[in-house]
Image (cartoon, rainbow, N blue to C red; front, side, top):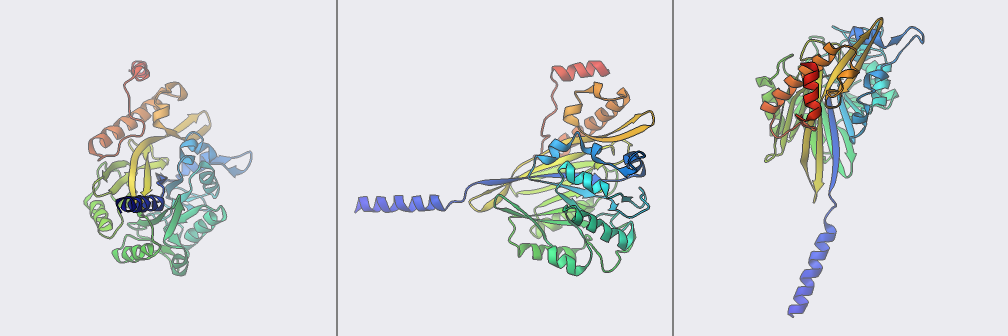
Length: 377
């Protein structure tokens, strides 16, 4: 009888092991604001081809954008509505979206304070441009019926389902034109969206939110209150944009909640320190025995190099941890010093205020670093 009992327990254990699901993971990369100021549009235009080309903007950062399973950014312009212009009402050529797609960016959040810059035509044209290029997006919709048919936005890989919600605090006082929809930070709207998302049985719900006050290093109370609201209703990960500067990131490993208050600018013509760069936030979700949790979180810094040579101007997004060792790359040593000023400030801020989220490639005081310090100072 004892042998039979042992055999039964062994068989039961084998069945339980067989029923266990394999461990799987998905890696997400979040980027800050993609902006299109007037000088950027002008720099992308070729008098020879009579066309716009934004592809050079991404040539140095492209390998990093293509590596994760999904790369997600905030598109803070409308697309394809002439005349093209930058601040205060943004409209960029459709060629910008083509370059974004080629760069490795997979998904765009389109709900931000510039969503209505070109009114109904701009909202609809932007959506049509993205759809024509098969770029996934969420946050703005041509109608309520359209939103109901495609939201919540679901991404899925390696047996992990994620619902992505996208909201903005407002639209610069420009009314959202009917019948179009711009997702506004409104409790009633958010609760309805979360309810719809939960019906899709996601393993995780993430909110990508345009909030806060511009040019502040630290989050304001409204951001903290909105994060608490999201947490209270089942959204444990919130990624923020809008302040145009980097703000802290917090990962409560016990509660499994995470917030990035602001990723800063991914690309823009804002040259005033510290608006000239941003952070790229990498998140890994892991599913084990049917439960999904945050397994890794880190950031890397990026900086926008505005290269001016004679009559030519170019904008290039640089991964800081690579180009901080290449002072010879820059046309002017003053540009290299500007990147260093941004990176020192961002690192200090995040080292002091981040919770459990380190830099992906930590700053080192090695031989090359020492030589660089001697070279500059």
